[in-house]
Image 1 (cartoon, helix red, strand yellow):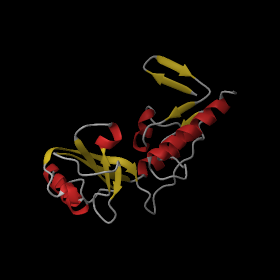
Image 2 (image 1 turned 180 degrees about the vertical axis):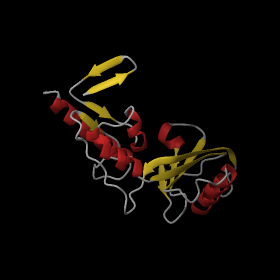
Image 3 (image 1 turned 135 degrees about the vertical axis):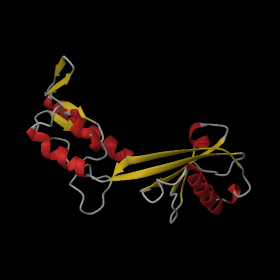
Length: 197
């Protein structure tokens, strides 16, 4: 397999591409080699699914565990950064996956939504004041697993030595960090085999 960057050329028995699905076609100039063109086309057709995270800093402790699920709500997960990382402030990250219906909301509306849902779920949050907030939107956070989507590609491609890694590959897991890690392990195992070790 060969990688080019400007005038530099590197050759290796295997190259692992760990870019997100939507960036795969951009690796090839002017267009993907025929052996991988269909994978690039399918990757280009994969629908996206946004994730919205609202970070809230409260004036007091409002959660007594590092992670809390909020079933049936728009904001589905709460992560207490204080408990996870030893912070002293009460910093909560409130997350909505598959957030297509809210990704276009204003920051103020998202902060209000997250605060309202927390106050409904957590009695300790009802009297607490939000001192600071930030909003993070990732419109292409993950791929969609909705029916009718193109199949997820495997680790090995028809382009000899060109391997794929990422949560969007066919690991048997959803688009999660666990899927990304599993795909990395799969790609590393194939690369080692191709290197003859």
